[in-house]
Length: 109
Length: 412
Image (tube, rainbow over all chains, first blue to last red; front, side, top):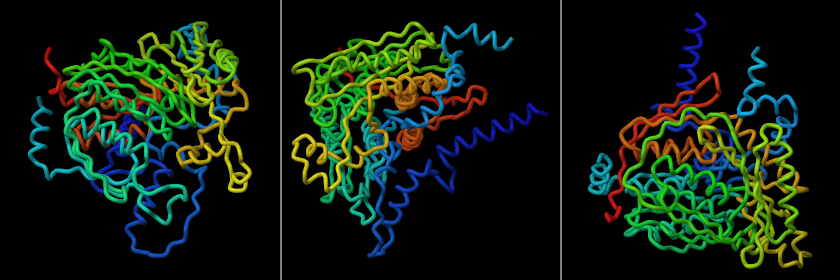
């Protein structure tokens, strides 16, 4: 039964990923995150014929790489330090290196 | 052959213009338009909007116009129509001819912004591309020329592009004044090879380049030591080359950066990079008493793009080295065969590949790649099968290529 459950879950996640990228007939391009949301919101505002609008002071700090045409992905320094600052976390990827092979096996034993 | 037909049928149906909105993903749409031969119309490019950021000028940015000019240079018969306000454009792609070209990139974006699409276009040109690009070589917004040279170019070999492929960094250029220069040479090919990149293997060695210009060479050494301190706990085979530029080769602004590449037993390359950038956030009050020419220069080049969160100022070179090392570990942890920055080329070439299944394992989709997948569907009609691998937390992408072939290639 658990296999079926996992299968169903995997199927669902697969659908979700496919949906996230290609959407469906109702929503051909689902937005990806808040940064893009805000950009799209601004775009749709243009269609309105409101002549007067409060000028929104956009915070520069809110502009991230995802709103810019670049293949780089931003990772904040604080997030990095939080994760990679701990010894445990550093050790968790040892098996990704050729040298870490044996240690991984020891752990499994 | 399939595309040959579709391109022809599209040329016949001149009314079939693909329409897009906004400045996001403009570069990839121009690239896909050039490859597929489909005309595009883009509207609402940074429209003059009361809600927009104060500094933001409406319409196309200078680097986007520069990229359009670059496309005109490497193609024959392209037509670009830009509206009076610059907020909409129509691009009719011509034939990619390649050849000898010189292009000055504006300092608002690094050379990587211009070079990335060239890497994808050049193999399909009529003549081999020989291009000299000047501008900023390393910054924190676009992939640096080092990453392109050490990670993106070796990737091309998998597709059958390798003879006389070269990227030479002749001069370094840091933000804000740039002054760097690179030479890129790419051969042409007839067809791409399909790829099966599913097993990332294990990391067997780490290589890197730390460069420094117009600054104490000691900076590069300190960056290297800090990065090694973290990476040596995993693997002894860590070698970081320090590249010190002097005199005319050192560009116009001081700077240093570190690019790290992890190479796996299966030849997968994962990279991370970080560059130093002196940043001064100058308020209006400060501007008055700023009599230093350089600070004023900084102020005038301050655009929304240059005020990104990722423009970290590093108190010491050690901080930069540690950050770059941690970024590399992050990339390795994801367990993909292709690093995040270079996913786009892998999906694009998989879609353009022969009528065969290409499979790629990546560590997680970036927003940039998702937008690329959407545009690939629109231009080339290729839908990827995206399957998450729950065990390794990776994503498997597979697709059937369209069998794109380079009809322009000169027969020798």
